[in-house]
Every structure is written in structure tokens, then in C-alpha cells.
Length: 185
Image (cartoon, rainbow, N blue to C red; front, side, top):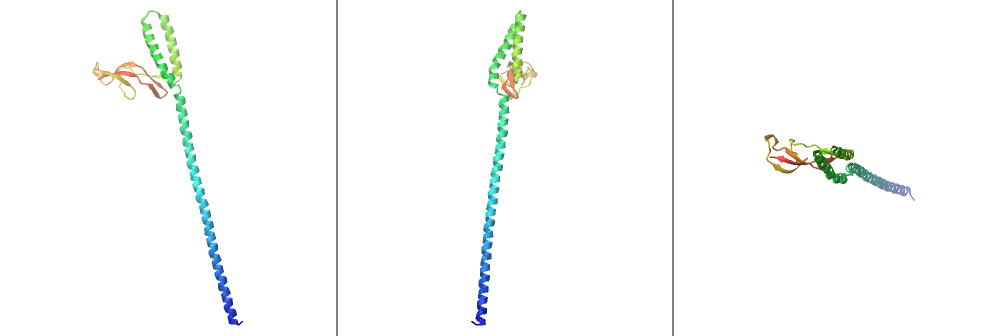
């Protein structure tokens, strides 16, 4: 072989090696891109899972807060049905005390008053309280239940409460029976 052929062959070998190196570099770049893509995919999956976790955690916190609030509300009004069923008994005590006070038997009046007071104190200890309403108070549709309207006996009683027919009660902050009133027109 001549020098010229050797040179051509050497140049060809160098070109082949350069092309091979270039091809390897392209393959390496592709591999790096694939690795970055894998890494990016993992980062995206991690971000997605973090988002799911945060949403689930927030939902659970809301659930805990809501059930806690419901439980507190339940404890406040747990005996509402019993209290509502006891209200007619309170009304009967008021009527009995009214009628007994007309009689001359003061011992009977004392006995019934003691029982009535004990009963009221027990119910008050459980959260029951009387809504105080008297004739002359302004009528409030949110608070009072108007059962009838009559012509006002005086000018000052127009649009105001003339008479209280039935007492109203609250249990905690909740009205369990609205006072029934007569309103002047």
C-alpha cells in the first residue's frame, strides 16, 4: 500500500471514529433526555400525590370540624324532645297556682309552689329558660307567634303585644316554643 492509500485509510478511519463518536454523543444526549423525562415524570407524580394528600388532609380537617360542631350542638339540645313534652306540665303548674291562690288553703299553695319551683329549677339547670314577654312590648315576628289581632285598647298598643296567651321557652340559644301573643292593630 502506498502512503497515499494509508493516508486515505487513516482519514477514513478518523472520519468513521468521529462519526461513531458523534453517534455516541447523540445516543448519550437521547439517554440524558430520557433520564430527564423519567425524572420529570417522577417529579410530576410526586406533585400529583402531594396535591391529593393535601386535598384529602383538608377534607378530613373539615370533616373533623363539622362533626365536632354537630356533636356540640347535639349536646346542647339533646333533651329538646323531653323539654318540649314538659312544657304543658309547666303550663298546668301555672294554672294550678293561679287557681289555688284564689282559695283560702295557704298550705296547699305553699306545697304546689315548692313542687313547681323545684321542677322549674331542674329544667332551668338543663338549659331551659323562659322568654320574658309582657303586654306593651313590641311585636317581633321572629320571636313571637301572633295568634290573633284585636283593636288596640289604647293608641300606644298599636302594633304591640296586648296579651300573652302562652309562654315561650328557649333551650340554650334555640327557641323551642314561641310565646303566643295577641297583637293590637
